[in-house]
Image (tube, rainbow, N blue to C red):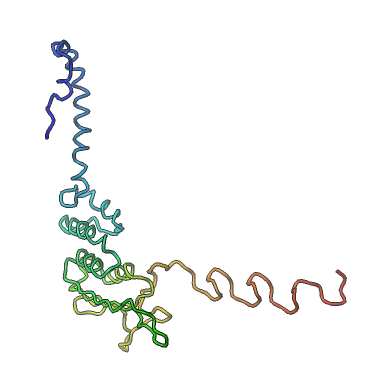
Length: 236
């Protein structure tokens, strides 16, 4: 239901309505108030990706954990990504949510094969390593590297994965001999990304502690119960 144009002036007592000064004075506040009320009435449309102003779309995407949306994308693509990502948010971490997000970003068909499972632990039998295979018609507006990073960022750290887009295998990458490149415990993870890319590598029980002998890395190694005691024959 809309407001009357004179919603504030009309509330003046009858005696003031006959006074031109009072009418013009209250009309100033009515004009300012109408603008504020219009903004309040429009809040629902501002956060609706189908009708929200274009500059607001990247802001909405950042609320959904997608600050990487390119503002140079066509308006239709931005609206589609934000709308589909919002629907997928409740299913994040599942095959359904992962597929919905990738289809929204690429604008193409995506098939996600999840070979992981939850099963009872059986003595003497080990469960297979979790593995996910992503087959996309294309990477959409993303580069090959950015698409692989997006996939890696949405999957749990221990999961190995393969990415194929447009008939090309993007990950794991192959060396000139055609063999998958990479090494370490997580060869199927791109370098420089992931949930713990900023952790330093190194030896020892903790990457932040120096490797070395002794019960504590901060103590010098050596013989005797206390390495910092003077040797026999020396004065204390």
